[in-house]
Length: 176
Image (cartoon, rainbow, N blue to C red; front, side):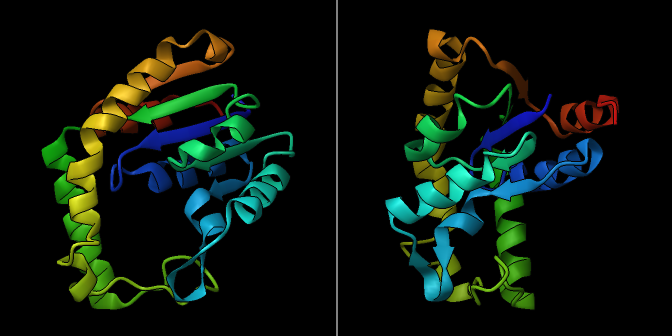
């Protein structure tokens, strides 16, 4: 387990697990969101995103978190492990809601150097991450199930974690 991708719906705990796993494996943590988002919620072009990601995954080992399907052609062929956090929708909604509420309240910067912060206005808008969760949960479930069966990813060891308990046991069982 040297080149790991962590996938899952928004708010499932990808970044939290990625940070813990990267620390345990003593390797860099790559967060796709931090490669994608620029200051003032501006989005990186595909060219910028692809270039940043290619540099990041050129290293011998890493833990990457994120669900940018258009980047799969860069990271998935290099990965040896994919961890899918597949929590129930109700739990993911709860985690998303509490995270968004806390971030809006504390005004913490989401990705270093961007100045991007969550707000209560955005939390309850049409662009809400909570609405995105409901729109994307089913399609991501289907897409991830298909990826696990896809012969072009046969070189990858897949783990599907379906509860907080399974996630905690997984991280505990990883040898440093």
